[in-house]
Image (cartoon, rainbow, N blue to C red; front, side):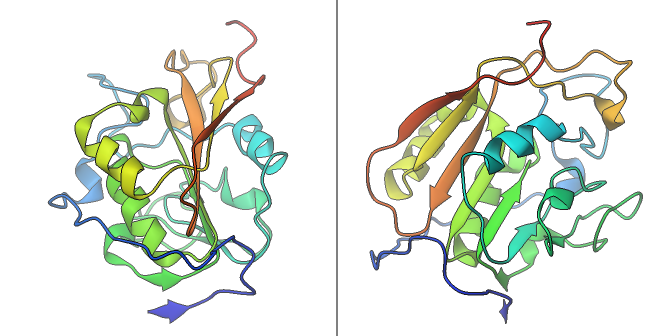
Length: 211
C-alpha cells in the first residue's frame, strides 16, 4: 500500500474496525449512473458534481491532509481540494490520473471524497474506509439509506453525519446545463474512521432553485 497520508486529522479514536467482505466486483465501466436508471444515461457515468455540492460540504467539514478523489471525471470535486490526488477509470477528459480502477487500487490517504457510480456506491464506501485514517465523504442518492446490505454496512460502519440537500442538485449528462437535471434527492454521507456513535442528520439549503 502506498502511504500518502499527512498528519492524522481524522478522528481515529482507537476503536477496532471490522471490514465487510465486498460483494462480487463488476468493473466500473458497467456501472449504473448515480442519477438513476435511464435508457439515455451517460455510458461512463459522467454526471459532473455541481460546485454547490462540494462547496456546501467544505463549509461543514474539515478535510485537512491528503484527499483522494477516485472517480474524479473532469475534476469538479477535486479542484476544490488543493493538492488532491485525482484519478478515474476513464481515459478521456480526466482531471487527474487515467485508467485507475479504484476498487483494485490501494493507497493510504487521510480522506476520500467522491461522487461514486450508483451501483458500486457501497463497494466504494467499504474500500474507501480501508484506505483512510480520517473521513470518507460520498455524494449518494438519499435512497442509499435503504436496503438490507446497507443496513449491515451502517451497523458495522456508522455514518457520522448525513447532510441532506433540501433542494435537488442540478446533475446533468456531461454537465450540459441545457439538459434536464436529476430530480432525485441527494445527500453527503460522511464517515469518520473509528466513529461508533449515532448518525446525525442535517439539512443543506442549496441546490436547484426551481424546486
